[in-house]
Length: 177
Image (cartoon, rainbow, N blue to C red; front, side, top):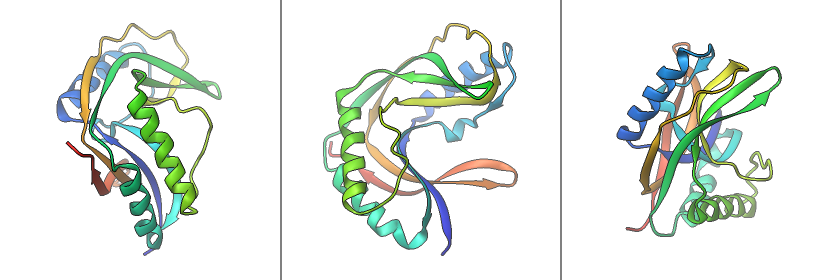
């Protein structure tokens, strides 16, 4: 095995992906950018970056330990963006959830306890990236208003395949019902 670009996140259900794709298509009329594939929509818990395939068992152990809890709901609503250089990243918002924030804190603690490096940027701001490298423009009002039950946490590999960025699920840890 070689090095892999990894992150831990929450996969979205198909109904939410459809709503977010519609939202992204409406944005296309207002701006140009690199729009995410609907199959890649997710909520990140921890971006791990480059890791050896041999580290996956330790990463899996961290995911399992942090995921030993009950399922919970998250709400998705509104659009936002943040600047990256002279461009912006456009996202759909994830409403504040104590359960989600607790899950993310526990995930980081379990990764640290196992000596697994990850990008620890400080304040956790959950979102779903719809587009990158967008020209900076005012955003139209977003209409996504959706709830999803979080039933599992997934370890994803991020890699270019056939010229497209693809997020491939590698491991999944189910939360208790």
